[in-house]
Image (cartoon, rainbow, N blue to C red; front, side, top):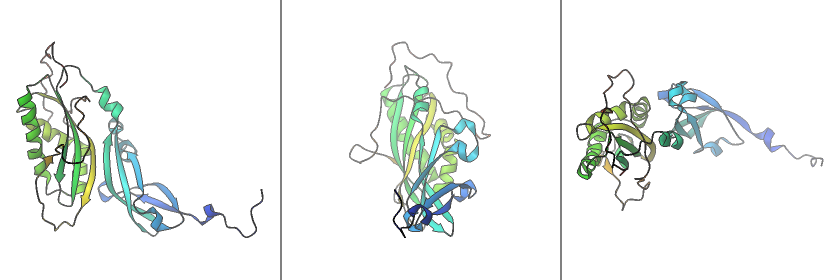
Length: 245
């Protein structure tokens, strides 16, 4: 059917904008987004695999979502919104007969409040008191990052340095096989001059958050990024009667 006389093609009215990811990724341009008005792009989310950004094949299971915060000329500038690890990757790391800690935490950074969902897999089944001590220890480790900004903390998580720091502290309580930050997202942004209220804390059942999934297993986080690797006690055989906690 012929178009009505004088009717404009809406697609031709739209303009292409270059997607620019944050400074910690070198302000890279990651493709184009189309919109008829720049304001329509604000808060739009775009996801990429870390492999798409850094070309590191070993990190293709990590996905980062950015949110467009403003448009300058033909460029759509973004900010970090969330990070997630592929569920298939986590499931492939399941090891029967080990204790799993799948625990969400709140961490207060210099310029934002973040929610982390963390998987810790022990080398074998541990006592309930050891598991409780490990959960209490994690906020203490995360508190060391309270002066970091979101972009800096994101770099530490992607590089694996945060996993290594948690791994080294938890292995003093019980042998640890793997640490994985499987999900991370921004809860609240704030001015950098706003005082930080509290340290990182585990989310309690009264706090609306991601439910703790005690039946999901993951596996060992190996130290990376030119840090001296810590030998995990994988030689220890898991008890035959052990089950996932």
